[in-house]
Amino acid sequence: LQDIGNNGLPAQLFPLGQCQGDCDSDDECQEGLLCLSRANFEDVPGCAGGDFDQHTDYCFQRPANYFWSTGNNGVPASAYPMNACDGDCDNDVDCAGDLVCFERDGNEPVPGCVGPATTGKDYCYDSNPGPTTPEPTNGPTTQKPTYAPTIPEPTTSPTTKPTDSPTTKPTPSPTHEFSTLPLQDIGNNGLPAQLFPLGQCQGDCDSDDECQEGLLCLSRANFEDVPGCAGGDFDQHTDYCFQRPANYFWSTGNNGVPASAYPMNACDGDCDNDVDCAGDLMCLQRDGNEPVPGCVGAATNGKDYCYDPNNA
Image 1: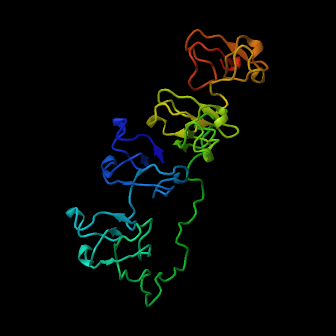
Image 2: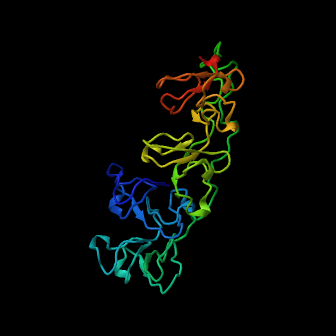
Image 3: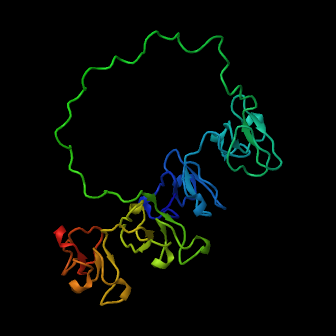
């Protein structure tokens, strides 16, 4: 689930796609999608993360047997006759084909339908769905067994000649250190309290203290990517908790403060000299946006970072 806008803003993100919110009506969803109104952590069919978000409304693709209110008292005319699991019907005439209207006084289950039904609302359903399994056959469905294996006869030599060397040069380390998770904007300023500290790819955080142990709060201003997370291009400036890759730029201290940040590791800043850096690392003095060997991410303009000179 991605909460990327509200009330039609930002305009370039509307209509919303599947599992995106906050929608106010079906018109704010892309063609073929509906807007699911939520009030208490309801699941969104086909989407993950509903347990983290109490009442944001999301666009979704309705399953065929999912309860849905399409009309009432004959309005709108385009909703009639109603299909299975549509409501609110008043009689069988409101339902398509051989479907019948299931009259409900409370929360009676409707055969063949799933999802949250509205209390007392009446829905069309199939009163005679027929057998759910095929009729048994009179004889075996498999063919008469063969006298020999159906697989080809094994060859006497390899089918392809092995190569003399690897096709690609192996990388010294994995290109991705962790799986990608969707960004989730689930709280702000420490509220709701039960959701803090935030987990990986969750926001909006204001400091590292609002993130679970081992995570950092990435401050964002212009659609910056969040390492290990997906969806940053939909959200301009929400700050998210993330797991910092080993070679990712990060500001850990300045002018010797805090003392716990020294000596600095690779891609840490702001260092002032080589003494600030651990082991054989060196401090790369920068006047602007010079690249730092072995480091990735968004470096701060003019900030100096520790690096491994062997990567230069």
